[in-house]
Amino acid sequence: MAKITMEEARSRVAAAMQAAGANDAMAKATARALVLAEAQGLASHGLSRVAQYAGHLHNGRVNGAATPTVIRSKGAAAVVDAQEGLAFAACELAVNEAVARAREFGISVVGVTNSH
Picture 1 (tube, rainbow, N blue to C red):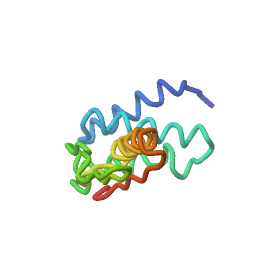
Picture 2 (picture 1 turned 90 degrees about the horizontal axis):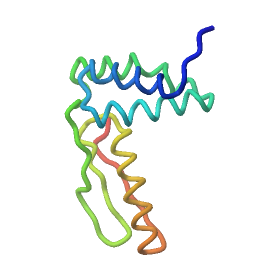
Picture 3 (picture 1 turned 180 degrees about the vertical axis):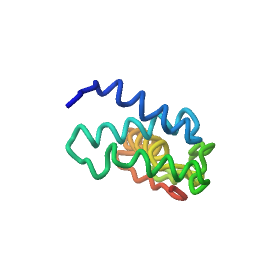
Picture 4 (picture 1 turned 90 degrees about the vertical axis):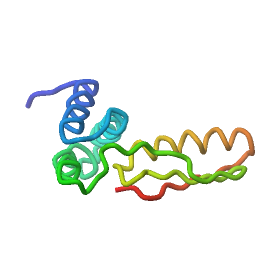
């Protein structure tokens, strides 16, 4: 069985997502998540999803141009709008927001809405 590095796998997945219509940030975030899941032995949430997500991008079920944004914010809480894109870029933004808010407030909750 041929083996490739995680970096090469991320590059190939990102290229497939971009070819199907995802913007650069969405493609790279999706690649990071799928390759990590695969490396952790979670094949059902790993590389097996590439073709499915590419199909959803290609047929318009997913907004490939989506740029997640914080749409509501108050103290330790926030909501990220994924703009109907694949969830991974929005989840990365949510985690970063949660960490920053937890550092400031000692606790945080950040939700993601409108994801694929």
